[in-house]
Image (tube, rainbow, N blue to C red; front, side, top):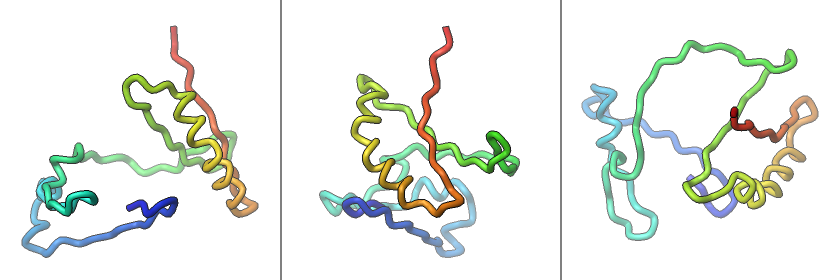
Length: 110
């Protein structure tokens, strides 16, 4: 959840009867922030499941976490970065000394 510029982690656990199947997550009701209307999660999100082999990713021998995103149709990546850069720089400045953040981009192959 986001409250202004603060991200607030939310953890919830369904009752045992409501978590018998993984597919029940899509039927979980969430409340709209503007209208207070309750809707199933599947109406406001794409719920998908997958298994991934856990591994520690490294780049230049350093443990790495990669975060990526795709801009909305009609929005250029440079516009997204223009709006996000100051917040990303502030986040990087607040990291402990052993951590660093790099901003990069993938080029389209021809």
